[in-house]
Image 1 (spheres, one colour):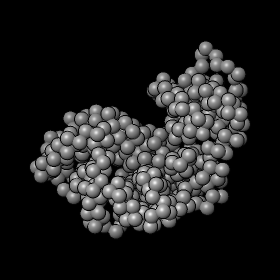
Image 2 (cartoon, one colour; image 1 turned 90 degrees about the horizontal axis):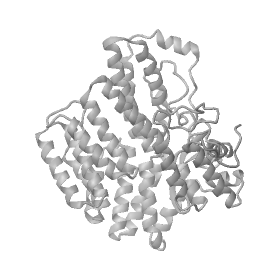
Image 3 (cartoon, rainbow, N blue to C red; image 1 turned 135 degrees about the vertical axis):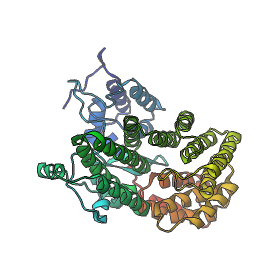
Image 4 (tube, rainbow, N blue to C red; image 1 turned 180 degrees about the horizontal axis):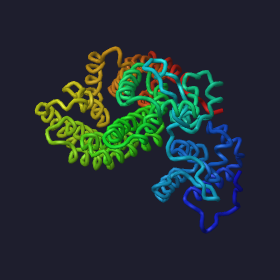
Length: 475
């Protein structure tokens, strides 16, 4: 265990400065590490390692600690500064000895044995990456629902154990040897990826991401052993796995892991030379940026995606949609609507791009516009758009139904129809509990805030109580 300094040394790095500031706030509030850890739902040993800069600090942990310590945003600003100042190739904190305590990747511990294409191989639950004793779960902190890293035992004891996935076993050396002797793996892994996408729509990403991360490690092992065309082909597939892992991580509220996987996907796409793949991932980065509170960054990424996409392709339409929503979040309604109109025009001219944007149609664009209408405060039109989308959504898209229900409920609340909003929100609560989707929880949090003044209205108290039952509450 590292020594906690009484004061900063001149050579202190950005994460050491952040840890020192955290300790100063904690001691000023007369809190022990154990007391603060209990309030923040963070393992005490992790908190100590945050203070000593021996463990990566997720941003949601910094937000939670700032809130509990009444730091007025100082810890969040310090976290942002440390993230910017840390060396780009080593963004995780480093110990005094100079050794990184954790790798930047959160993909898991080793290659798994080759698995048959069976559903139980895909839906086995698992922990998030290296932190096998913690999971990222929704918790009510000072009235808001935030996704925070929590010791697994706390979740298991909370009554919402479905959010505490169990770890997948690491591979043995024999399994790695068996993998190396396997025949051509491309179609095997491609088919696994398709099944995981389908499974995600049924049960949500929390149970699928660990399996995907294990298969990603196995795929990378095979790719490194390959040469020539086979290596490039496997790298292109590995890039698609990384992008998908980023999407799953975002949907369970683990933003750090989402950014990591998506950045790796973008780097790999440049190596393969697939400009279509690069354009798609730039669009995903734009989506991730706007969803994590950086709409200006999203505009730049969406513009880069459009420049990279083939003119007249569906990838160009996707880029314009990301640009449109970023404008809406920035309150630029005119620009947002013009971009949506452009997307519809481009879609009419676009041909088939195979896998790229095969799901794009006018109804999809209408639903995307409904989300932007809600961001612009036009709740009546947004509600109508989501109601139409729900009527067309196939029943197998269970997680997406939860997202649409939660967004529709928030829109109806914005129109003043709180009884309908509470009823629709109650349906979304059930799907949120099943899937653990951060997108659903995020909308339900907004709905909860909107309905708080109307607790006496029909169904509102019942909705808020049902939401409380599926999130953690600090002691």
